[in-house]
Image (spheres, rainbow over the protein chains, first blue to last red):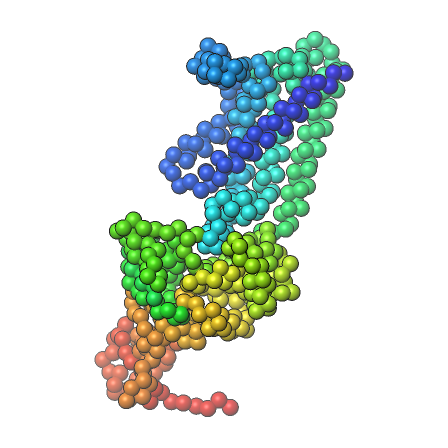
Length: 224
Length: 284
């Protein structure tokens, strides 16, 4: 059995999750703090991947990344980077696709913290950065864990978007979900079965870990 | 000397209003901020601490300007040297008692400061506990100790004792008194509790619906006056029955038997009660 699609899937999920920790947490923090009238618009845009068919998102990203578009041309001439049918392209589209899975729990976690925690830190002379990293983030561990795991698991299960942007290039863009489709197309059911079973077990174990850990963390009640 | 002059729009229970306060706090004074819920007490504390900006205002602390909206000066909360004790204590749940205090320690200040505060506040045994395991009184002590770590110029206390039982409350009142004397701190305490104000404060600022009602000593504000006729207490008539008149004072309801002097009283009239008119019975 060819394990490469499974490794590629895990690699994509891991890189996407790391990118989303870097991108998603600041966005969630900004939204949690914002009182702007534009906030609902931004929230709606971030939530779009929850309701859009992945093929719709994939289609527009394919257009945007294509070497014939303005963005595609610029990336190719400036950075020699082609996003269509490439691993970086998969990562960027996965980040967009899984954005709500990171932003929503983290934003909800931050909004649920009492305002006085942030204010107490400010009155103790601490900068916003110190307050965020030493007071706010450590007190939303369950939300961070949920965001991280859901992003990871959601990326494992991607299909439509990956197919649109990445196609089916072995070792580059052929992730497990694509491999399953590929094997079924060629009537190779036993190989499809193995990929599918492995994905099923991994996904179940991940979700079980989230629920068990959050049960343990929520027992340590958040006192104020 | 701390000079405060504030105008800020408020959303009050009865609609929109304005916080309109001019006050002075003497050096090392202990001032109580007294008024009903929603009067703007917490808002005033938040403005002084820099957590909230008023539309117009001046705050000067010992000659230093913290806020002057006309000159567009507004020091952020971080730059105002204050100690703020929040109503919900706001202890950081992810840190132990000692870590809460260490977090407040300014850079390059010796850690012995934290040790000595833990000792004077009787918190040594709890140093390595997380806040969730502490009682209300203990949380309050930690919050106070944490506010003192920076050696603030003003200590702002937002109803710190309101959620505590009576015994703990009295213990903490004594500690507040000690802290005020030892640290020579200008202190502003929000309190609803008149006996507490009498015990702790030398000055009272009474506000209602954002407006300054009265300032003065507790005696002056709560209507106990000593003069040649003896002690009098001011209040408002709230019950008017043929056999009983009730007057609401800062100390609660006082019942008076109608007499020749009470003829013609109406509900809502402001009256003074003379101590000489009240009977007195020794408790057995």
